[in-house]
Image (cartoon, rainbow, N blue to C red):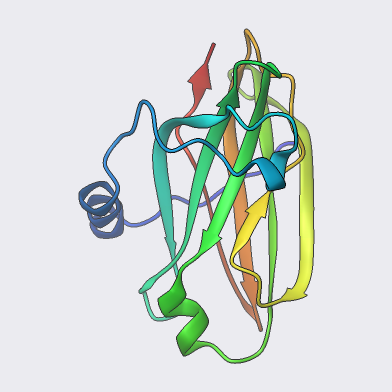
Length: 154
C-alpha cells in the first residue's frame, strides 16, 4: 500500500524537534503491549502531529526489538488533546516498508475506532535489514491529522 502523507508545516516541525529531540535509545517498550518483545526501544525521531487548532495532539514513534527482529509503530495521544476534546477518536497506525524509492508496502496496520485510549501499538513487522518508518493518523470528527517518523534502515 502506498500512502501519501502531507508534511507538517516548517514551524510545527521545528517545534517537534525542539520538544522531542532525536533519540537513539529510549525507555524500553511496555511488555504488556508488545508481548515477548519487551526489549524494544525507540529508533529515530518522534513525529508530533497537530489538532485542528494547531496544538500538539499525537506523537508517533518507531520501535525496534532486537530479540524479536521486529519493528513496531507507537502512537500517543497527548493529555492536553484528551482534556480539550470530548467524545472519541480513531487512530490508525502501522509500519511501512520502503522497498525502493517510490515502492512502499504496508507492513501491517492496526485501527482502533471510537476510543479515548492514549497509547496505541501496531502489529510487529519483520524489519531486520529493511528500511521502515512508522505511520499514523488521528481522526476526530471530520478532522484528520497524520504523519510519519523518519525512515530507519537496518
